[in-house]
Image (cartoon, rainbow, N blue to C red):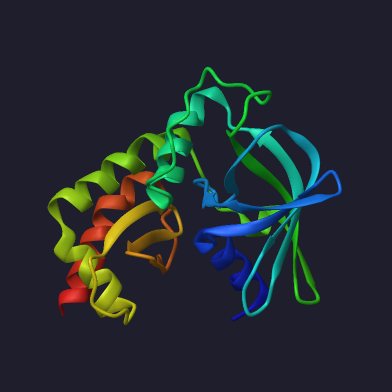
Length: 210
């Protein structure tokens, strides 16, 4: 796996990390935004922050902490809560001065081993259209097509049997969860436009059944 692939995988699957801000460090729970940027709850914005994602090769992210924009907050909150179901919902009325605001880690670069990778290489395409489609698609799959999701995880990815559900969907792949286990199915190739979501999911379901 290349450093770029390691970085993309870490951004999508890391459920926690160590955040360094203002000379202090804290353990934080993480989810990913549509483009892969980390989402976390924090008390205040910060112009400079470092987020370390643990793994066989640690991924060290540099960037800033910014409150999620009001217009994208519902979608980002849904993504965070899908990864951390017990997290208390927050509303758009909160500001960066309040405790536990949902923040976006505005990524500038990542160090993976000896490689430094810019944000534009790590992050994927996102759009308002995809934001609006994603949660409907995820909810539909979890309500009506658990057999297909099970096929994605077990037949295509070789994961052990479990109560697999879909937690998120983006232009490059989909995230799956069974209990405390998380995995990701990458699209090959990535979607060219959000309207391809349905046909790609059907195609993968047929492949899993073959």
